Image (cartoon, rainbow, N blue to C red; front, side):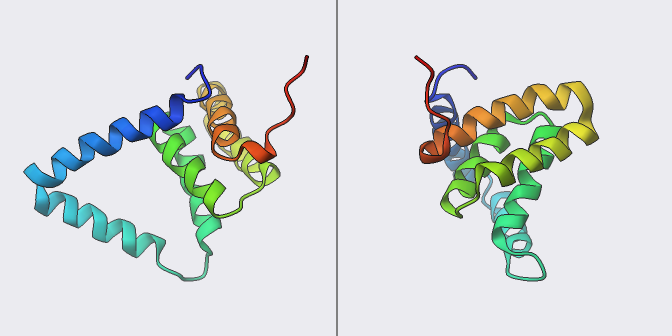
Length: 123
């Protein structure tokens, strides 16, 4: 991902394609939706912690779509840049060099989703 709008564009495109699957494969998509709802239901972990875990897995699995959706969710949930970066450090620890490349993408995605937390551009 290279420009500031790449993750927003990426997730919009994925959402559009998922809508097609909802029409053509309703049972599968209903099952996935139910699994998502159950996994995200309140429990011992709060929603932000669950999204941080999902981001770490998305980085380790090298999934740009996952990075886009979960950084957007983390921005909505008020995650801090420090929380996201620490999560990314764990993903790199567990996934090595390839995870580092996707962690760098996740930094850009979070900066796009939470621009108020992004560092100021250098002149």
